[in-house]
Image (cartoon, rainbow, N blue to C red; front, side):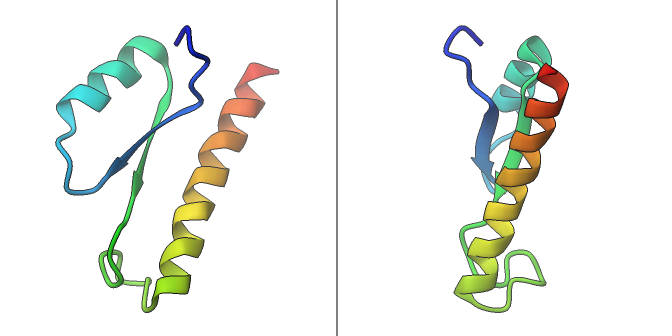
Length: 69
């Protein structure tokens, strides 16, 4: 929190306990990114996978920006 972090980024397969505890203590949102095509069903190729990850980050960052106002 004192580093002004905007989001907690983790991959789906990583454990949730530590990021969840940090999120509860700081109010920072957790963003689960995918690393493999097909991991989210709608990521049919590498480009759609990256687009989805970027979209998730954009959404989380815009929520943080909106709550800071």
